[in-house]
Image (cartoon, rainbow, N blue to C red; front, side, top):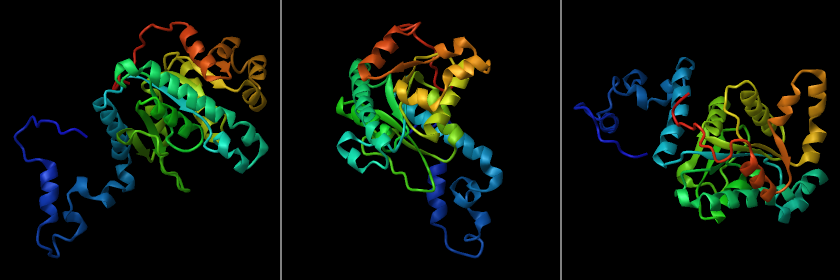
Length: 283
């Protein structure tokens, strides 16, 4: 994080944090109550401090993305279990092996998007994924192959999930709160691409669609890779026939199969080329 020029005359908090660690050990100075509040992990993790942790988790990635000059993003959601085609022989099921083609499409899509936005010096249409394996890895990998930067929004899970090696290190974030993580996915989004996946992908897809359907978020190109997969998993027409969504809601998204088809759909989307109000920090 960049060092800002201080706009006050008071002693710097970082300096005091270092100084406090060097005081002589006495019963008073080793007591938990003596620790500086902002340097006390036990205090910050108390139940009563949840509102502060929520704010910090929103603020830290926001500040770092602003400092990196990230203005807009292309969001890629998709399954962590979808293998690279070269490794599809190790897939748990035949379906996962068959879906491995979408790893390549995700990789190619991210590469093409990054190449197209290279003239912005990495500020517009930056690829953002969940930072993990599978489709997420493919997205960050494609951006890296195009010589661009990409964002990874990881989250701490009971089973280990390390960031994939292709995420730009200074744009690799880790979250505790799913809700704040999903906010960061969408705050700068210029398009949302959904690849086959499981519960997490479904959660991200439906939350994004709900925000658009209810007018809580501007409409952006919303693409579902793999019509056969998605129509098998979700009976979209049944929702409209039941009246639980409207026929117009089925126009909020499109099905695509390839990276080239996805880019054409983005370019052809109503309002394409029109600058959208993506304003970091507002909302």
